Amino acid sequence: MRKKLVVGNWKMNGDRARNLALIDGLKGRIPAGVEVAVCPPSPYLAQVQALGEPLGLAVGAQDLSPRKEGAFTGDVAAAMLLDVGCEWVLVGHSERRTLHGEGNGLVAEKVAVALEAGLKPILCVGETLAERDGGQAEEVVRSQVMSVVSLLGADAMARVVVAYEPVWAIGTGRTATPEQAELMHACIRECLELAGVAVAGVRILYGGSVTAANAAALFAQPNIDGALVGGASLVADGFSSICAAAAAAAS
Ligand code: PEP
Image (cartoon, rainbow, N blue to C red; front, side):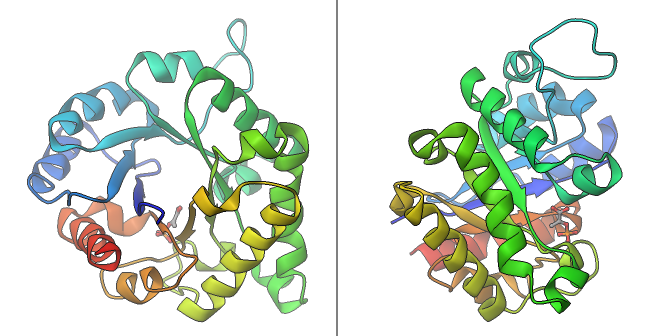
């Protein structure tokens, strides 16, 4: 059985004092049997790593550079993320794809660089509302996933976590129904299997307005292996309830 994984994406929120208060609120509330990580903005990675470690809370970055080092102003290399204690890294979040013009090719390169460096990449994929309304949701998500498989190969892809995040559900309060999410997760798993990836161990997270109220129903689906949580990860009570729902689903 795949271990459930719950990841909080803090986006561009927080400061030293608020981070401290938030991690403090999670003390004693990270359930055994579930993997939990948070992704703070990069200036706070070391702070949050130090605070989170005694709680069993891992840390991830929200992005990484595809380059190793050098004259790339503003970029952060995989080795630097490892050096400050990062275990995870989000790649291809829809806000990076839309606001920073990241295409499938660059996203695939970043996943490859992360894996090579020893980070655990979480590949974010998902369709827009127009694509869903146009009946293209599966095709869009399949091509996002396959561009990474093509570069990495099936063996390396088995070490990637996939996060299905329909763009229309991110930060909108409009979550996909458990059935809608499950259909897409099953489609992603099938697409990976056809590509020769050992899918039994690949975790596929759902992201998009996950809250304490809807988490249990999502986690009850056979192909939903956890969640990537944005807004609700900024409140200790909400985030720890989502982690508890993951633990309950796993037991
Ligand atoms: C996200 O940004 O990855 C996300 C899922 O956000 P939210 O939970 O706020 O929709």
